[in-house]
Image 1 (spheres, helix red, strand yellow):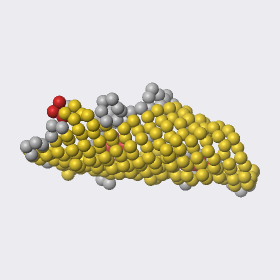
Image 2 (cartoon, rainbow, N blue to C red):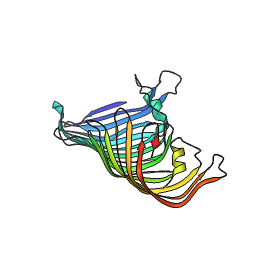
Image 3 (spheres, rainbow, N blue to C red):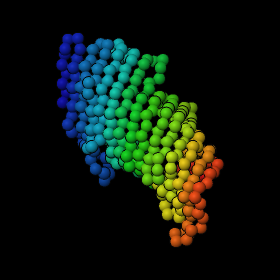
Image 4 (spheres, one colour):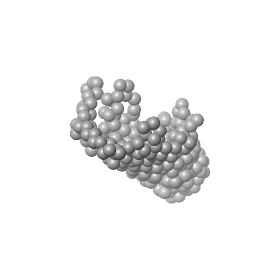
Length: 275
């Protein structure tokens, strides 16, 4: 449905479709979508009162304002507020409707996000303020769990005071997160571990059945790059407790320690974790 109303000094616009269907090539399910747009347009302002995209339980809703000489296609300022709920299990099917869908690892979980996109003129980079949380996040063979935080993103960087990750192994906090997108991807953060159980962490990283128990806590400054391949290095102190290593059958204890302190380095890439 399209509804266009001349209000003399402005135009009212409504575009709505209760049902769009896209059929990916191959033995994949049909993508059903609902879309709606309401707005008011004059020579100096576009006011989006409602923008909605919905597919099953996932949705994006937004509203915003764009200022400038719109008859000359010149924009001076703008902002867009968004709220998103996404079932990540369905993302792969959405991408299959593209002419050349990208190859992505399997992932699942729930993403909720609130965001504010701002544009302050040609001399300033657009910025995105957002807060987010995930539930039951799985990426490839990695069970990540819940991630939450607030961040500021631009075309060249991402910064956050704290991003928290929590799963069956325990919580971890990434403080003072600083990511640069250009000229190459670089990142650094201070990792703070309250209490992390090592056996469960290895299981979540796709290495199950390791016959040990170890509770860890500590603070480790980390930095890394992700250009041709992922390369992360963390260097700091860890405190361990309730350390126990058993034989393969799990019936005999080989090493046991109540508490210990260690200092060293940890290295992470796409294939392994070393320390």
